[in-house]
Length: 188
Ligand code: IMP
Image (tube, rainbow, N blue to C red; front, side):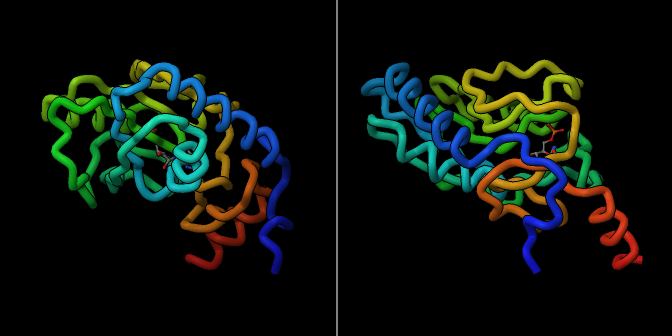
């Protein structure tokens, strides 16, 4: 079965993604120069974005990973109370941190994450998100670098999942409605 058959519409093509990640990498390089920023990748969705982004940054960076899940959310909505499932190994005090995220939706997850990291004394924190859904925002989030703004639709691909599937699609798309119906039936 080809998972591309489940896609109703492609919102951002693989070519557009490659072009934009290259631009963002250059911009980060210009902004940070010799400051050696620490990229903190939010697992699991941002892994694909990180992998392309970091290779487009022409200055030295460090990389670490943070696992975050939201308490009591569904697989399509977040609750805003986050649980750290994996913490960074790096002591971030006095580091210039760039949080690399897959998508800022309501902004609740990102706000909680920034608040937490700020308690650890970094020199600065900037947010770099692959996607943003501004229409869904419930709290203000200061996004320094954004790949693409997307409409208020549930999107999959390029790291983003529905029920842990579709992360490996090379583009961003929207699923056919029957995919959700089928999954609900399977889960009973
Ligand atoms: P927020 O707290 O509402 O901003 O949600 C952030 C998290 O919800 C993201 O890191 C994603 O894991 C997930 N999420 C939000 N919208 C989508 C979507 O359209 N597709 C896949 N995951 C999403």
